[in-house]
Length: 305
Image 1 (tube, rainbow, N blue to C red):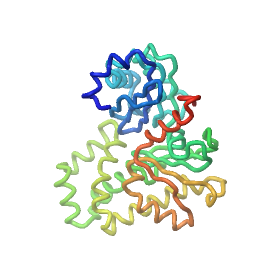
Image 2: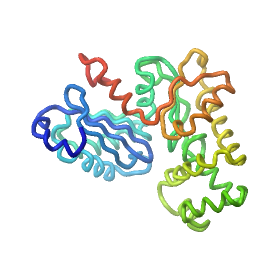
Image 3: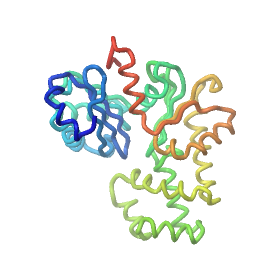
């Protein structure tokens, strides 16, 4: 049901107990509203709500805007978000949602890596990874995360992420290490000079999303030797840190990935997996459909965690 037709059914739906499920990264958040039977009523998108980069007040404002006239009918919220792996940050998000949706009886906030695992592995054991604006991974036992390498952000780790790929691309550009025709295409595409780029990097907020915004350009020119090597080196480091670090039999553990970078650069990821004698079982751009399936698969226990 889309937003246009939604109005006709509104008065029939509003009395039902609704579930709101969100998958939030640093750049964008995907929302889906479900009725009491697990059927989709409405889906929406918003900016990313990583509590490391946005305030509780900003989160509250976005939730109020997204929920709109449905706010009073939302009984339960299941929020999976980047930056929510630490309880202190998860509490910021939970408090903001509670203020935006005071009638909700239950609000659960979990890290995005658990959401990725539940989406792609459901109740199966395996390794689940995220490669979007940021990067992360975990060992999942079919119910919870049992091991997780430190997620250190784009300055210290996040190899292969949109932020690091963008950072490395900009470094080559500003160091004049790319072919002249590639440099010209970059400046023509983004209409920014070196001074403006440096200002955005060092004097503006949300630098990780700014860096990730250059990945479409990187993908477009991924055949250029300098950029192809950049991508390959990033995903080599990604595998070494985010997958090979775990003390499990990787040949028997399904490896899944979610995120826009994982999806669009999947040919490089499949190749790197082969280099290590491993197989990737699933790559999806958006984990939300899998999360809906996870929470509604058993109708007798619908929406249970």
